[in-house]
Every structure is written in structure tokens, then in C-alpha cells.
Length: 597
Image (cartoon, rainbow, N blue to C red; front, side, top):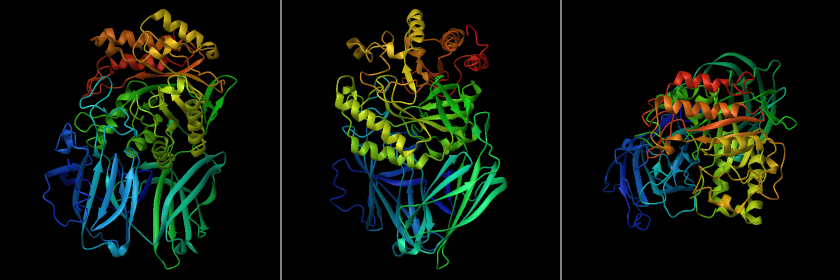
């Protein structure tokens, strides 16, 4: 079983997944009545973590829970002495965490991880852990595809409230390794360590590192991964600073990460404090360099042309919604995608579990990571949105599979961008904010259309008329010629008839590579399957393949999600068409011998 963070692992851990107690708080009286400090409460029943309260897998399956509810469980003192780090993978949307009678902290954001320090003198033989959750449909916080109504509608699904990723404890010394950034450079890795804990204890600490190559065995809850051989080691003296410390790891011979050869490197870090206390973490990553050739409109991965054959993946499961029942369900979905010939996923309107991203690293599937949007017709609340996006990027930037980050999707939460200069400036700053946090990854400002500044000019269309499709693809050879028109605002009502212009007026137009990042969705056009569906998908993909200036696509979608039945597989992951023939078609795209090329 993989640990909750295969990309950043500390041992030992105490996994707190499983049965907790649940209490509903329809009147929101728990804070006033100090439920967080109460030793015993009359709880309503059990709930299985980490599954949203609305799901069957949680054991509750409450379709419309109150905005506020509480979790409770008892925790034994871990075997390792000292302070603890309490991790939450994701809690939707707001969490207040109590340890015994102490309010440890509050977190806002349903898609970002957080960790809270529990001082050693607060750890008893038997401890009470209480979590208050608030998830409001009226909020302007990011919701992704979660409905903000009582019932699912259109392409918006059931709510996913509460703890939906793992909860676990780690033992830490007074000063510890808080985060590590591994950046690929031409001659190796640039490593940045951010320490946590007591700054005075950092002074004089020694940092030992070992770099390994060739991952042979995945990490588990009990053990670090096993690699083929060590390729470097060294020692650093840690300065007393909360701002972090950098060092360089040279590599004589680099084996780059790519879909054809997803080679992994492992970094083991050991921090020894002056008094002898020790902290150790293990990171798994890959060495990959991304760039753009503007003269040819190409994405280059390690200097080689990357044609992206993507499929849209929304990360939902029949019984668990956002949460996979187990990691085998994650592996199965990746098998479906790669088995159908795709070399990557656009993870749509959801931040994925780190285990899922790690499996993409291992499989060589490239990933577009997309920040979930606020409710579609709401107005963006920028402060919590970008705080959460920053946290997501900082957690996931060691995954070599993530080659692109999408800030907004189809202007959701930012609809005024079509006419407002202020909104366009906000969109431009969103691109810059994202790029500054991780310059090594491509950034799309606003997926689908209404671009202001972007590394990839991606276009969404669900046109049915073949002549319109062919004209659009020809026109995308010179996308600056496609002008915004007032009737483009009707796209959300008539997506099968209208395509919005890729660039907004005043945009920083460039020779960005062009991709069709949404097409298909044939389930919306009627009940199709088998041969009929295959022929439609084949025609759609081979039409793109005729146009050399279009450097990839993302087909909508891998599998059905609830009422949105337009997948290559149904929600139970049963194939709707001949997958072997689909694989042959997908593999033709991007090749010089593709039909009509």
C-alpha cells in the first residue's frame, strides 16, 4: 500500500483512515457549546474516512448534509517520542482541528493539503482528535464540478463535503524538514530545503543526502522505496533560517523522464540536530526539461517534440466520488487511459490525490493540473483562490508528470473577462503568479478560449458540423485572425454551434503551440455506442491529425460521470467501443503517416 505522500515520505507514520464518529450540526452550535473540547459527545453514528459524507463509501450517503458537521476519534500516543505533525490530505471546504482541548488550527480550501504541529507536551497516552467541517453551497470558494444547488445539474455533480483524502501522523524533532523542491537543471538537480520548527535548533544541524537512480520497488506505509543504485551523496551545514537553503546535485549521466521512459530518481535526506535528534525524508521525482520552440509552435520535452494525446479525466468514482476506494482503482484508470493509446491526462476541475500523481509519474503519463473553479456564474474571490492554488503548486511541483497548469477553465468565476479590462489584468496576473511559483511547468491562463497570456493556445469545441470543424482547424494556423464577436457569449448555451475566439483583445499574442484541449462529448448528442461511437471518435481524431500546426488534443472524456454520459467507458469503467481499434487510431495522431497528413 502506497503512503499518502509517495513523493515526500517520512517514516514511521500513523494512518488515521477508517471509522470516525460523526455528529451533524444543522444549527451551527458546536463552537458555541465547545464541542471541540468536550471529552464525550452523543455522536450520530460512524463515518469512514477518507470519503465525503455524501458518498456510499463513507457509510453515511447523506445527499444534502448540513453545512456544518463534526468528526471525532481517539488517538493513542505513537511509539516515537516527541512532537507530532498532523496531516490532512484534503478537507472540503473549511476545517477547524482540535487536539484534546486545544484548537490546533483552521484551514480554508477543499483541495489543498495542510499539516499542524502538535507539541510533545500536548501528546497524552490517549488523545481526542476533533474536526469541525463547514461546506457551504453559497461560498465563492473553488468547487470544481460540485453542484451549488440541491441537486446535480448539467455537468455539475453531487457535493463532496468533509475529509476526502487521508489523515495521518508523523513524529518530528524540534526542527525538521518541512518541504523540499527538486528542480531539474541541465547538469543535475537544484535542491531547496525549507526547514520547520524551532529556528534555534536548526543552527549547527547537519544535512546528509543520497541520490538514487532507477526505481525498483514503490514505497509503502512501512518502508522507503528501493532503487537500483546510488549516484551521489553529500553533506550540507544547515543555517538557522526559515527562508530555506539551496544546494546543487551534479549528475554525470542524466536519464531523463518521458512517457516512453519514465525514469525516476530518489533523494534521501537526513537532518541531524546538534543534540542528536534526527529527521529523515525520502523524495521520488524525475529529471525532465520543458521548453517551447516558438518558431515551429512546438512543446519540447527534453529537447524533443512532444505531441500530446490526452484524455479528460474528472477523478470520480461510483461509490467514493472524489476518493478512490483503494489505489487499485487508481491504477485501473491509468490502465484504461494508456491502454486506449493516450499519453496523458487533463485532470479536470479537481486536484488529484498525490498517490494518483505518483502513479502517473511511474507510468509516464503526462498531466495537466487544473485549479478547480469557483461556481460558474459567481465572481472570483481572489485571496482564498490564489492562496489555495499556491499551496497546491508547492505540494505537487516535484511530480515530473505535471507538465502544464491551468488556472481557469472557460472563464468560470471570471466571466467578465470578455468585456472588463480589470478582469483581463487579473487573468494576466494569474498567469504570472502561477509561472513564478514553478517556472519549469507550462501555464494556461484560461483553458478553452479568452486567453490573455498563455504558454499553450488551447481551444475547446464541441462542433457537430464537419465543415465548421475543418474551417476552425485551418484558421488556427493563424489564430490571431480569429476575432471575438458578441454572439460568442452564447457559447455556453450553444456549444455545438459556436466556438469562442482564442485570444481576447489586448492579449499578449505569441506563437504558442496550438492544442484542441476539449472535443468529443458524443454522449451529449444521443445514445451511441459500439461501431457508431468508434467511427465518430475516429473521424474527430484523424481530422486533427491532418493539421500539423495542431500539436495535440484532449478527448472528452475517459469515463462517464453520473449524469454526464459521454465517456469512452461507462461509470463502472466498462468499454463503450472497441478499445484496440481506438488505440490504433490514437497512436496515428501526431505521426507523419497519419491519414490525410
